[in-house]
Image (cartoon, rainbow, N blue to C red):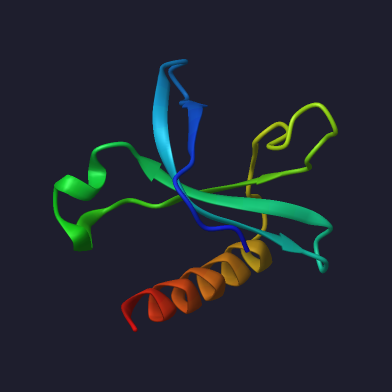
Length: 94
């Protein structure tokens, strides 16, 4: 699991580019994909409890470490992502 200062540009449904801070990325062997959790830049200045965290899946390619971001489609994937996030948050608080 990588953790560090990293930013990605995400295009929302309206086609607006938004700079986001990467929370962490991880790989899932179960689903054969990598996942990235991120939140909009500046969100951490608002209210800690209020940050909306987004998740996307991606398949890294050789030219592009991040690959194409894909929406997360299944409940199983969301459950796994939520579990990873909870673990990450718990470790972060120690």
